[in-house]
Image (cartoon, rainbow, N blue to C red; front, side, top):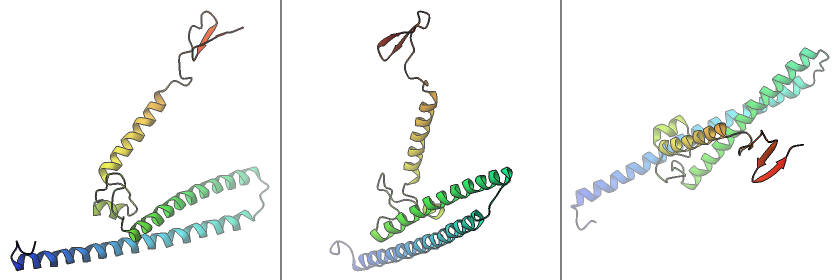
Length: 173
């Protein structure tokens, strides 16, 4: 390439490439710091909720309303902890992708995930286009499932007290 371009052009290209690599390293460092900070926050929050639950669980309730209230509180707590655990898992996977050099690459199409998406959702694994396709497929699947008959195939001719189930005739008694 050097032989085809004047020196000032390829020197500028090399400098621009180095500047781009520096910017990428800075961005990765920023995302890594943001993910690590969120990870620490989640771990502390989970530990605190579990400690509070243990402390609260030591109390003995005799009133039915108190027992019901405590049960609802426990269920809500576990839902929150489970959601935080899932986010923690996604953060750990994103940190692993940063270490391996795969961070910011769509797992479906291999294209770069836009910085704005990563800023909004730093553990994103799909670009916006692939995420939209995935959500459309989920929506189609949900709609198809909701529209499917409960028993699958037709029950046949009920007037003759016969039911056809998967090509087998059954005579009702």
